[in-house]
Image (cartoon, rainbow over all chains, first blue to last red; front, side):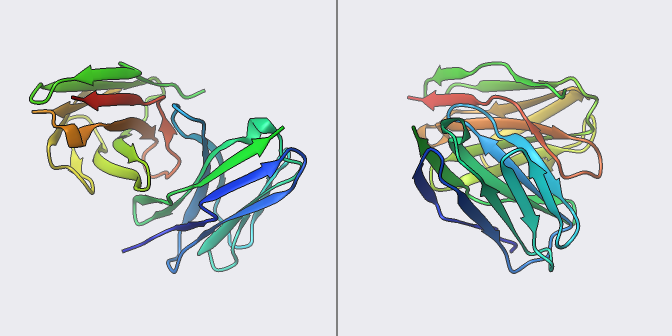
Length: 109
Length: 112
């Protein structure tokens, strides 16, 4: 069974701080997506990474796919209250999309 | 932009009722999915469909059925609602042979 473990489960920080959240697996994925979900809403796709070692930037968010395509990280620079939400990673393999349980981020003003 | 809509944001039903949750997408996606999301359990796949009139069981299909009569519409049916089906239900769609899924806003279902 393929699993994606996300850490930490919860993170509470002050506005302006930097943070990194992680998504790890023992399995290789064809691609990996990151989603953000705000309370009471559906997840919104942020980015897809497909190549081992790939780095993508989306404003203050930096996403990296591990060289072996088994793990990924999301780094946020100078976090803002608007970054608050549940961050989900999802790995694609053999036609299936496997979701991690997410990191719940709270950014306090 | 892809738009996935769900028929209700909030729904309250009684035990034993038949419940229909509707999902419509406007981007001509072949694949459609139904998930439920519960605290501590994450997203769990109930059913999915790769084409009209096709359906496949996900990880937790018991107590649910689905219908896909048109490409843009995917319905989730709770034949006889039970309290353990109280949950957030999320519909998603994607293009054939891609993994990127686009989600609707969700339906918060409470069964009393």
